[in-house]
Amino acid sequence: MHKAFLQNNDIKSSKSRLSHLLLHKLDFYLSEVQLSLDSVLDKRLVRTFYDLIVAILLHRHNSMGLLLSELGGYICGFAHAPAGTKRISNLLRSKKWTSTIIDNFLFIQTRKRLESLVKQGKRPLMLWDDSRLEKAESWFLEGLCSVESSKAKRLTRIKKGYYSPPSKRICVPGYHWTSTLLSALGESVSVCQMSWWTTRGKYKEYGRNIMFRMLEKLQKQVGKGILHVLDRGYANEWTIEWFTNFEQDFLVRWKKNHLLIHSTKGKKQPHLLARSFKARSKKIALDSQRKILKSISIAWTQVQHPSFEDISLSLVIVRDTKNYQSPLYLLTSLPVESAKEAWEICHSYMHRWNIEQAFRFAKTELAIESPRLWFFENTLKLLAIVSLIYDFLMKLIRNWPSIIKIIINQFAHRTGNRCQNALTPIYRLRTAIQNMLWCYFAQQNSG
Image 1 (cartoon, rainbow, N blue to C red):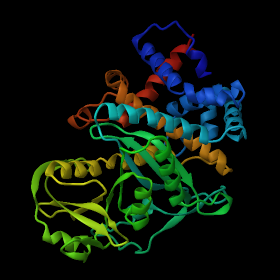
Image 2: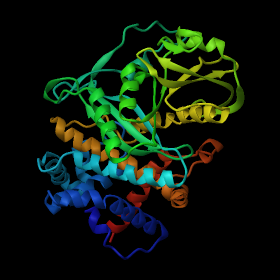
Image 3: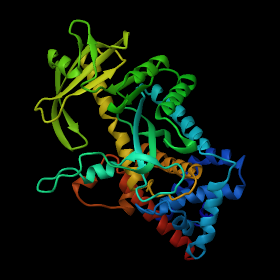
């Protein structure tokens, strides 16, 4: 249905022109994926693929955003919602395609952007992190495994004046989620890879295998020049071993109790080793998470890992001068010899917060925890389509800021300094696109 609107040349109002422009940009963005699908699928299923993405943009609901029965009404009209649901089911059930087609498309886009960043003289940052999709009420869906519930952990956090919550971790059914996003300092992110995996059943997978395959692909098709930024969950010796073997630079937040070797101080834990190194530079920085200005200091030194004493590493120590927060111990394979290089390492790690925002946006605005599909392969296809939508929204913000500002002001106007000064208002963009498309399709259907 939505494909037919692209052929309508009777565009009267400025708001309709904006909607028509957005649909054309979405069609152009998906052109390579649709060509790949067209070689293996019937053209009606390829058309359903495009309609499904538009339907997800139209249907904004936290708990039912990806239910096929809800999306079916946006495909064929609400009077024929069962027919639309059947079309989506036929697309996802088809054995002629897999989510690998979308993964390959995202990787090709990543390679193109890598070349662009290098030409601009910017260092590409590959942001790694893990999350999980919680399906607490599900029981029989294929591929479910035990995952630690971050939602339960947040809800049972100790609050003053309330009872003490359980001390042990709470696990629920769900899927593991490993993501890799490409970015650079001062740039927005784009999706390189999003993988969902399980630790049980015939689709059993290991998170380390996903990282191994990704590093192998990067080494063969991209080469060197990327700085991989990782959080404390990756602070172990196999991370250093793999990134060294695949000739990739890395930056990982090291745990304070994992041993490191210094040439004169010997083998010590980082928090003990850091006492010997005073601050060499200070500055006032913005804590984007807490929206406050903080005074931070930095120091650095050369160290080795006990298992790889022949590999020279740099330890960057970032401290809050008022001791409100614990120091950061950043271990990197890049040489750090000046304050400028040390601050660049610090800001590169702080930029990793963008992947946490991506997880939050996908779970809230894109309802990525709402699918209720029986089979795991069908679930992977639907989740891959969601990753396409997130990448498209970030590309809009990155490449067409003037158009995005007009769309937001017309269809998602907000008052107050907090909303007006937002750097990347992707949540307002999501609302604005929904409102804009609703107005456009209502106008077209009114005759």
